[in-house]
Length: 425
Ligand SMILES: *Cc1c(COP(=O)(O)O)cnc(C)c1O
Image (cartoon, rainbow, N blue to C red; front, side, top):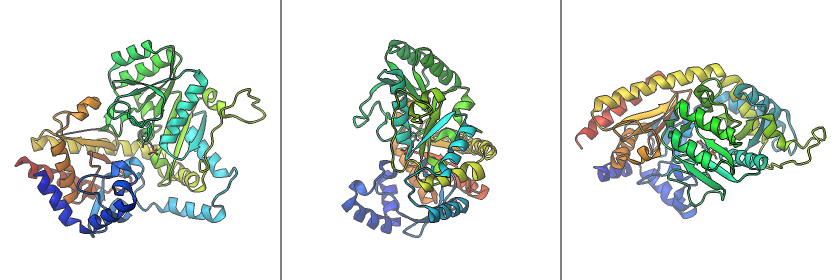
């Protein structure tokens, strides 16, 4: 059945196939972002508007991926595009300080409860710099992370630490296992510089942390003198000030990215003045030791301008709260459709982020996610594509602000129809 589903996909998408064949001559695998590829080949898109995507073979899809949460605004948010166009006419590459970066910094500090913030080009860099901040302030060298966690291309723990990770000394703990994680923190207490945690494994399958786990781990880490780093690159969209606040856990440093850049590359790390002021080079601060933080595009005009519009005009705290509730409601509808199918499929997630799993019950950690029926998982993905719904090959769906109720209803129908077709498998 899978071979047939793949060949049907190939038959429906000859132009994407041609594009893929050409791309492979210059880009290994035909891509420059591993997550975007899948068998038999990924689609090539020609245009998008609001929550619609158009491919080179003339198909139109409901975009349920929302670029892995970076596409929160949909594909045609004119408030951002117009503001960035106007700013670029004034000064494209400043090579100096400009007001938009201060404005965005203020918006971020006020929104997410940070004393200070610094900008980077990506979430990966934000996490690398947050780790640097912790290493420099503690003088220690071990970093506790979680199995199934993802903090960037060089901080990848999908199945333990990837061999290509940045060469830090990592301790990999089991997610949502409070006792074992606290024991690891105790064991490494003297050398632990930081604990880095996602409040929900995002790439790892939309597995939320339980509150007790998040709170206990951060409290214990702090008690042994380690810095707590909250990776909110995806999850700062939840609730008025991000997901850790909803879990009742307070980190020392939080990292950000994705949607805040409004479609432009973006990353940021921020938190307590004590930690962040290691970067304070001002004569007034008169510090004996300062940490340097470079990056040509850290304060680039387009990302800074877009970020201001996103946080002040579009995705306000009120909108964020409503969007989280809308996501919770939609995920419950998805769960009902899955339950009715009688197949071993389920959905996990929080707010406007979720993942379909070919598993009988929602996963609690990365090992559970690894137990998926991979053939059924792929058949769900290809079945949704055939019915005009674009999601992640691994099952992830993220609601953007432009999705209409009609589109969401169509997605539920497509899911129901897909699963109906798979019952005869
Ligand atoms: C996407 C992501 C990152 C990396 O951000 P990039 O901008 O892709 O480098 C880090 N952490 C989490 C949780 C992410 O989802």
